Image (cartoon, rainbow, N blue to C red):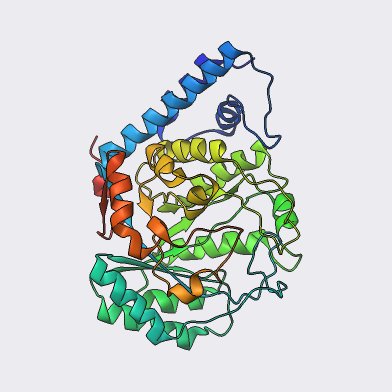
Length: 374
């Protein structure tokens, strides 16, 4: 039996305190029903209606919190996927090194700067360089790319999403002008981590990378895949604990989506409902954080990205990569890369966001403590 009143008390508590205990997190997450064999309950029609109303109560609280801090603005970031080579062999990922069907590519500095030029003209003031962990981009090459972007577009923020590096690598790129770094921890449970990654990869190393990024002054982003194979609600509770330790300025979560050329090819897709609920909970815990409505949300369901915004997200990341490589950066099946997901479709995206009552802006949208006005 679900205690709806208790769940509402927890929602009100985290709205006020902006933190959540393990016990409260598990109680709240257990108050909803999900697909994919996560927390399946045999609810009657009346109970289903109560759970539906609880979810809407949470959504409204989260959206009100976001509106209070960010107004009706949704920030757009220009995504540049500059390499799909990767030295790692993560079990879930379509660009894992052992995928012989992946059509590999790299962008040189001039290609990347062309993407930035296009984005700047459209109105982007944040660029996100994302790629596999490609050893080709050593510190010398990457430093030159970062410095060139920041020299030419000094009024823009630069986010990197290039995986695990040593502290010196991160430090030099910060000195060259990089502002932000995205590194999802994926799961904070060692056993779960070992089922998603090869034995030569370490959860502790990933956590240490995140701590180093914070120490160096990056606006730091982390996050998880929702509904990944073997994930439990207890795993997600542990993720809340870890994220509250890290205090991320950005949080990227999206549903797990399988890729046909990985060992997880036949696994079920992740959870749309659970993803939306987590966006709302995270908004209440981290009211100042920048939370994207991810490409994966738009892939798992048409209009999914807009749903993410209505549940508390406030960032979208249209694709600025050259058209001829977008279909090669396939982390999962059926990834959307054209239409309103693309840079060329910004006006369509703007219209979609306007239709749900929000305003798309190209402003940098930094993490700012002084946004919070109680």
